[in-house]
Length: 223
Image 1: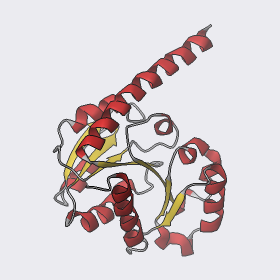
Image 2 (image 1 turned 180 degrees about the vertical axis):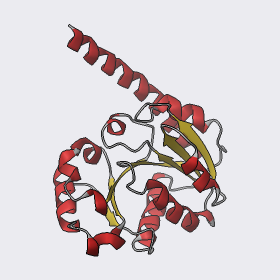
Image 3 (image 1 turned 60 degrees about the vertical axis):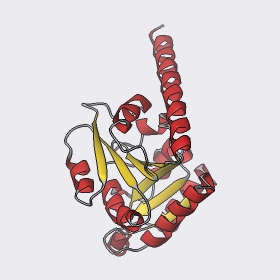
């Protein structure tokens, strides 16, 4: 009986989350705010990727970031140092963001953003189960993590539309096969768009940001 109750509670939690996520999506569609949700294991480089991405967008678009972490405002402070509006969502122990947390934080943001990036708590398990109302879900895989992560954490890759392989400047010194990671991820989610980037050297950042702009134009063709 305990197992049945656990399943029912989880189903109820996800249903409530999805209701708020849909409300958020409708609001973002109305304001033409293109929302990008970043997921990864801790240390894969989500904030560093944003530090390379945002300057390429800021001269043409209004951008903002919601930062999810268990504790501290360190990542939000890094984003604010770029001159970008950032709101920290501190979960206090919860290993992922949920739509009600995002909705509460979003109320503190400007309502005329062109791009909103949501950086989830570092975790490849729980975040994959929670819709945050995003238009684009991106999973990051860093070279130091190893190329076997798609098979180990399939739901994170199955629920994403984009895979960004980060820290590519370390490829020469690490036992990581881009092709092996790509193929394993595509077996799980054949529709994945795959980018290989290095925020340190700038490798792949331009194609990545151009892709984001194109996806926004496709989502909001009259914006």
